[in-house]
Amino acid sequence: MPNRDLAPSEIPLKVLVIDADEFARALLRQGLGRERCVLNVLLVDSLEEAIKQIPRFDPNAIFVDPLNLGLEAASQFIFKARHHWPEITFVLFTDLAVAEEQRADFYRGERKRFSHYFKLDKRTPANAFQEELRAVVSACQEDSMWRMSEGSLNRLIETAKHLAGSAEMPANGVRLLTEVGGFLSQLQKQRRDQRPDGPLSVFVSYRFAEEDYIGGLNLLLEQHGFVVVTGKSANTFVSRAVLDRIKACDLFLCLMTRDKEKTDGTFATSPWLLEEKGAALAFGKPIVMMVEEGVTDFGGLQGDWQRIHFGPKGFLSAAIQAVQQLKSYSGSGQLESAGTPDAGPATSAPQ
Image 1 (cartoon, rainbow, N blue to C red):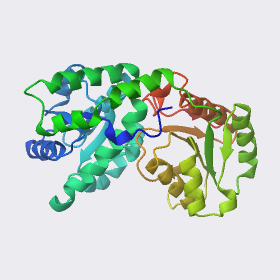
Image 2 (image 1 turned 90 degrees about the vertical axis):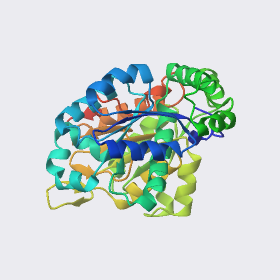
Image 3 (image 1 turned 180 degrees about the vertical axis):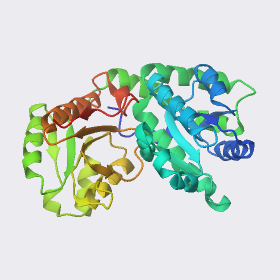
Image 4 (image 1 turned 120 degrees about the vertical axis):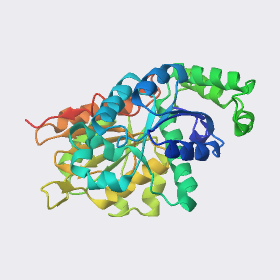
């Protein structure tokens, strides 16, 4: 695991913007230029050009509007790109009101994952745009902390060195490199050499009605060397004690089971589970979500953290997958796998 004293917000970003709207591209470039963590920005107006530029530019964040580029074509591009370059964080920079009006189509099929992508609304008022952009940029940095492999760290270090003596270096880039200093090299070394001392702790978030599930899950976690922490004694709301426990743990596992049925026949999970997951995101914890079949409301922004779906008879298989994913976050040489590659979320189908 990376040193917890290192702030994910110090990771520089190379941002590729894909948008057919010239005004929107210019607005985003201007906003990104005000963020000291943004090392470089490349603007393109088509998916075809983006495909050519990704290997050359080597971005670790992509802002894309799937609506004005053609929803089907943009969707195929996004999912293929995520499969080939899983280290890249995607942001949907689009008109969210239009997306909501077209909800049935916008989130159809594989695109249902769009509901969990980072988003920046093109209708954000001008006086709030920079603040909203800053929040999304921060989320991208947090995501990059877990996605970046040894190779991508090397490439980012080389880019920083190259730009330091180049006319392409933006004004805030010199300040960035000065302030970041040896952060990337230090993070790279820790990825290679450092392992946590002692067993890792996992905060397990669950509905207290699910004792049948949770007993076996906790036992499985303990058998694999994890220390299990829950919020049960802190009652059914996110108290200060629960927040402190989440913050103190290394990892976060959320068991999202059915709570209340919605009018469309799907289910919401318990609201305090969503709050606990939100707290884990805020604290930068690697997250695994086990989602019961029929639960559609996961809440909040989490990019592509591992989601494992299970049906009535598939819980054991899902629990094993969850433990494997948590172990991959432990610094055992698979840290870069944090986040779900776009082959789709791991699924334990009902039998």
